[in-house]
Image (cartoon, rainbow, N blue to C red; front, side, top):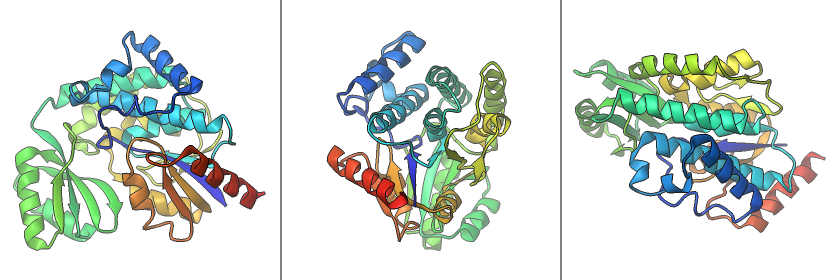
Length: 308
């Protein structure tokens, strides 16, 4: 049986997420290193006002994920697999040894800036619950304004991206078709669609200056829903995941088929673990947020003993 660390994407953020991390030396070291790389305090980005900025959100998610994972790995062996939803791919890559933390901080800062500059306002993402993919694609194909399928989170949970008017119109039609909910997400950019092709190409250029290594752990891409092994494939995945559809549902099923039976969601949030429970019926799913350290320790030790 295998263990997977999963890292959340944008939308999971909340003010104070870095301040809520464990008071531990390895966590403080992550905060200090990121602050040194940026030339500004990471903790200053962890406020409601600062998190209105896409760059700040993505940097905080990166640091929160890496810090929490490193804290757990002080006392436990590395997981068999890592994966991340959207920006969550970056802390996953750091923990897998693909990318140095300092390089990840620089690239994520660049990523956030490019995305925010491309669409400073009037665009975003909306979650549609209760309709299958065929119904969502039919709504998209008959929309009067461009809107895109961005995330496949479950068989009946999808996320679309586009302009606010286009998403509002699609949400209205989705409810009429029987959707149980249509919610505008806490996203200020239309991620995971062709609208971000140009920022993705610019980010790929920035990646040319960075050295990537083969992953020391299993790295599951949430866009192609399979394991990637070479620096070239990982460079492409990390640079272009902001303009490609995320198939989180297929990624979870891939992990389960590979024998993953302990799914641990890094902070912040509990959304990924909620989605995973629908797939990991025979396994254990836990979110670090709200879970005691001794409980996490017991679960990680149990998985090691089961494997041995």
